[in-house]
Amino acid sequence: MRVIVHTGKGGVGKTSISAATALHCAELGLKTLVMSTDTAHSLGDSLDKQIGPEPSEVYPNLWAQEVDARYSMDKYWGRVQRYMVALFSRKGVEDIVAEEVTILPGFEEGAHLLWINQYFKNKDFDVLIVDAAPTAETLRLLSLPDVTRWWFERVLTLTQGVTKVIRPISKLMRRGDAVPDDDAWDQVRDLFDMLDHVRALLSDPEVSSMRLVVNPERMVIKETQRTYTYLNLYGYATDAIIVNRILPDEVTDPYFDARRQRQKENLTFVQEAFGMMPMLKAPLFSDEVGGLEDLRRLGKALYGDTNPARRMFDGVTHKIESYGDNGEYILKVPLGFADKADIDLYRSRDEITLRVGPYRRNIVLPSALHNLEIADAKHVESSLHIRFYNPDATPAAKGH
Image (cartoon, rainbow, N blue to C red; front, side, top):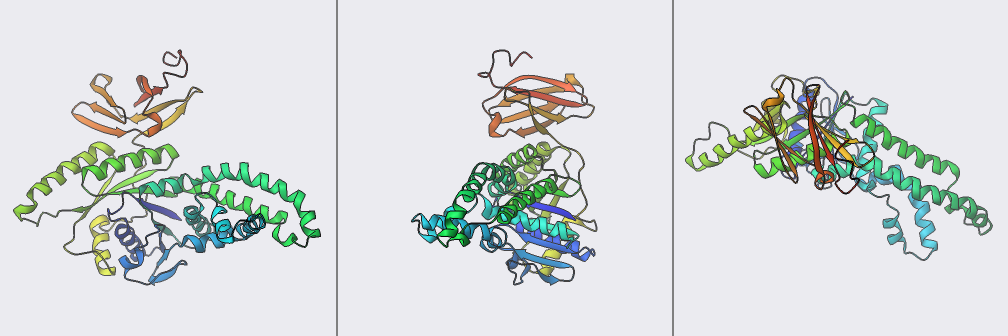
């Protein structure tokens, strides 16, 4: 199964892009599911179909699902949560409050990941298209396996130890039904193993691709650069940039001349920012995109006769890796056959600008690097390696 995740700033048209991509895949004969993980669902409106928390077929080869967090949590977390609610309630906490505090941190979003695991395990579909929430929520979702594993190891294992003590007492008090048996904790371990498995699936470029949806507006592009950098940091492969709502050439009203010129400049900026990454373009339609016919037109504009599920980019435009034990990082930027003499490097607090001959590349840095300084920059095996160090860590850090 191929997994395609569309993410980007809110309002850029991710849902329409996801629905159009899914329809295009379905009409190529691929059994396709499009799944919305945004809490403010609009996938059903885009498809002009009634859909719910379980997949429903809306067109030949095409299924759709709007994941409901509460429904999913009950499906995957309900048994253990009911135990914990009972435990808190006996301590005097009201049931409704107990229910809220026993929600695993981030798990309302994380329940979406478990659906992906189910579909992959059961081989239900050829392609899964994920209409992801706006950028910040998506990044929280993708980092969830790390967060929940920490929570599990430090909190739930402690709780499990406590149950071994209180279970005999609870049985004497005829309250043993509120204390989970060992198989319940096995279920929790299985849940975390599933999250780890999904993390592995989403970070495998042969299986999954992240695609960043932008509008040709400078502010949107800048945020998308940050998203791309953070995705690299987590090890998720991005294989395309989708630029949506480009003014078509047939719009000749002088009122739009300035906007068209600005869009052209911003399209150049996208190419500078993402290098060799494929850029797919979709026009601004004269009316709101909704219903299968409009989605078909959008899919045709984006993909022509090609298969959207194929992997579109094998390279890495840049990568950030930790280095040594002193909190250092290396930013690796592939530069092909660039001559070292042609490379210039400029740095502001949150951005690196590279000039290679007449070409320029802007790389937005993650916040972890903002307060670090550049130790050196070396040309190594057709890549530029820029090393960042913490000047407060050790006096020798800069020199090694």
